[in-house]
Length: 395
Ligand SMILES: NC(=O)c1ccc[n+]([C@@H]2O[C@H](COP(=O)([O-])OP(=O)(O)OC[C@H]3O[C@@H](n4cnc5c(N)ncnc54)[C@H](O)[C@@H]3O)[C@@H](O)[C@H]2O)c1
Image 1 (cartoon, protein in one colour):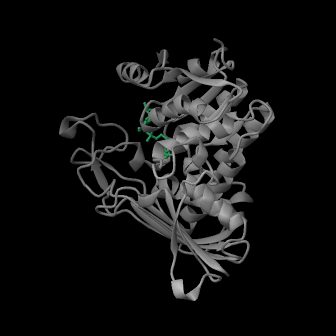
Image 2: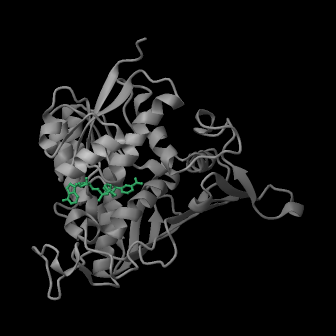
Image 3: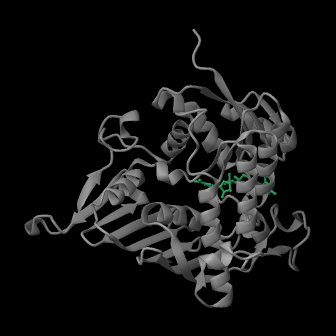
């Protein structure tokens, strides 16, 4: 029995996101009829034994330690970039030059100029391009955006988000790319990019930011303990200097006149990956809390005053975004669903429909990240246009 033709994917990077994306390709055809069958055919990574083990675990037929060889393969249609942010722009530009469709994990690049260059390369090549802002594809987040767009809260006046994790609270956590600014490991880029994407998507353009940042643990042990490999950036005592923020927060001023606040931290003890997004409009409030990711809280000024408060909406009804593709009411979905939904969304209209959110959104998010960096460094409000209109980065 023959199904839709194969669309062959090469995944660059086999860590957490290599796994999540591999899962997405498997699940997507079960969710909706697609014009192509996505097949994760090849995966690359720096360690030979590591990438071989990952390929076996993820059910991917071939592996390589050379991402350039993956990009050059004629039988690969899509390059899926799951490496640290500092590597994204170079791989994306090479993939565009090779005529491949590109799915790139967030953040799109290290800086706004790099992100803009990746966008220009993809547009020049006329290839499909998307950034992995997967949280948009959770049913409750998609429903929140739909309700805001449909006017359920009226005019958006306040937008508020926090993302708290304890990833960096243990001083013994060894150095890796997440502590390295040159690899794009900042907390603003890591956690903030998702929140900024959701802010732009729900409440429109962010015009200016006023941010602050702190690094509480200035040095990290090298991997493998005291005998671990030293290298550039190594410091006395066998550790390496941290060049990223542990936590940042910002005031946001939207183009619409709405006010926003955002706090991102990997320094919050006993907070695993907790994020919340709240919108207060002229006629209502909506709240999403990741710990209850199938739900939204909603209150409207038009509600019966005798029932004052907010109701809990279960974002699992077949009329809600994505819900009908998954399980019956009451079963809910988890993080992994966002990756299946992502693939189904991107491939549903293949090859005619452009992908969304594309590199243009990736660059817009990057501009706000850069503005936050510049603001925290300079101790002043920074207009996002200072980043997008500068010849050189504002940091
Ligand atoms: N959308 C999400 O929910 C989500 C979650 C986590 C990470 N991410 C993003 O996905 C990307 C990858 O993150 P991850 O958690 O999978 O990382 P990871 O550390 O688990 O895996 C990184 C992979 O990239 C490879 N790599 C190539 N060059 C490297 C370098 N110079 N340093 C380190 N590794 C290198 C490694 O071999 C490995 O295969 C990042 O851009 C990150 O921001 C997204």
